Length: 335
Image (cartoon, rainbow, N blue to C red):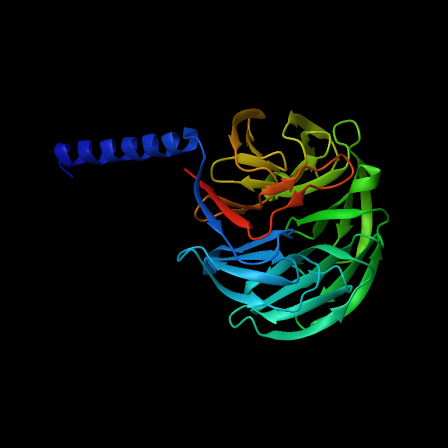
């Protein structure tokens, strides 16, 4: 390599490093707002980043949104009171938790064809797939239990008693599942191989009514959204509280981006808090839209998706706001 070529090579490396640093520092912004058909009821969002598909739990159906064409490309129907969708791309399967009739709908990811329904206990809410054990875990919010589904056979194989009002779940890919117990201010730890609760971490010193949950699996860190306008960072194995950071009111979801080492908390007051996951300092508070309380991260495109609707009548401490019909929106946040 000549000296001139070597110099160009070094400069290209420096330019790339500078570009990455700039991208990390760049503020996030809402880059798209799209109105979608349907009811103004929703819950969790799930992403199949490899196939560019966003799954939106939406009233009595699951909308499937193509993140490349920016269009709804399909629907999983007849999912009454659907709360969330667990994705098993290697098995070509999806699982939707239906709160109104206490079932899980099993469907084919490629075709969205419904393959059947499975019974759960009362009001399945958060649902997650554990690739290590090939098992699906549906958190039954009103029963305090986890319904365990063998994803290979699509059969219910067990029920785990946890206790309390269960919310978001996260798996570490190494045999542990974490689930928030909202009414007890606990983070429960479940062995996904032996199917039993092995620990309960009291996080009440930092977090009241834990809802949102995301994981940095290599470091065993959990990012927990709390209704006392905090995001708690907890070491999953020990329960040690690493940080407590102010976030917006009505936080209902968190996300973690390993590439940028950032954590995010979406809140119903219309804010998205961006946290530096190394220093635990807030880097940005982005205005999104009131009611945009739920989010999911596309880890390949490094974009966040949120849903919201326009408010017709403001809510109270006990009741959610009344929303305007025909205003259901998908927000895309990026750099």
